[in-house]
Image (tube, rainbow, N blue to C red; front, top):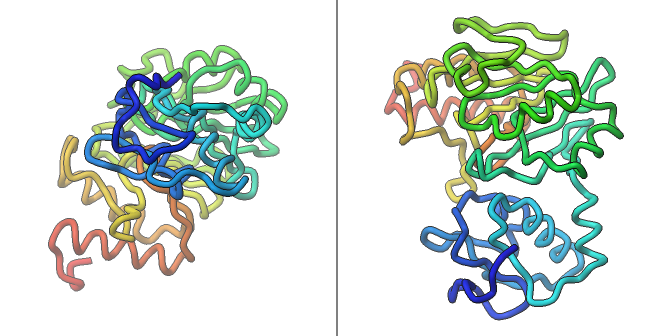
Length: 294
C-alpha cells in the first residue's frame, strides 16, 4: 500500500495520492484518466474524483497498480469493495481486462476471454486467490496465450491451478521453458476456429499477437493507441529488430479487426476501415514511407 510520507508533492490536495514508488507504467491513467496524469517519471493525481463513477475508477486504478503506489487518506470501504469485485472488468462480448497488473511485467495489461469452447487468459496478471476464483466462476482457463517473454508474470501459477495450456513462441520460450505449446516460425497458426496466432517479431524475437473473432487483436507490446497523439503507436526503443517490426505491422494491415488490446499502452476501438487506415498511417509515419510503398 502507498506510503503517505512518500506522497509526491505534485499531487493535488485531497484523498487520493501517488507516492514515489510509482514506476510510471500507465495503468492508473488508463483506468482513471480524469484523476491521474503523467508528470515527468511518475503518475500523479491532478484532479480528485468528484462523482461516484470517478471515485470507483480511481479505486480500480489503486487496486490494479502493480506496485501499490496509489493510496488514500481515508478509504471508502463500500466503493473499494465494489472496485475490487469489478475485476475482470468487462470490455465487450466476453472479453475482459483482468486487472491486478504485475510488477513482474512492468504493469502490463492482461485479458480474459470467456468462450463456450474454453476460456483464455492473454498474458498474466498477479496471482491472487480472488482473481483465480473469479476465473473459476466463469469456467476456468483452458489456454494461456503469452504474447512475449516480458509479460509472462504469474502464468505458471495460473496454468497449474487450472491445468491450462500455455502458448509461447520458441524464440521467447526461455521465459516459460515448460510451456505446453511452442509456436515456431513466422506463419500464422489457427489455434481454434475463432483464434489465430500471428507471430509479430520486432519488439522481441518471439513476439506474437492473438486475433479473436476477426475483431479483437491482443497485440502484446508491438502495437497500442497513443492517447496524446490520437494515433496508433509501436516501439521505437526496446526493439529487437526494426525491419522485422515493420514487416510484422504489415502482416496485420489487411486483417479485419476493430479492437487493439495491448499489454502496454491504451486500448482502442475503431471501425475496421478506420483501424486499417490507422495502421497505414502508422507505417507511413514510423518508417517514412510514401503511400505508394504501402
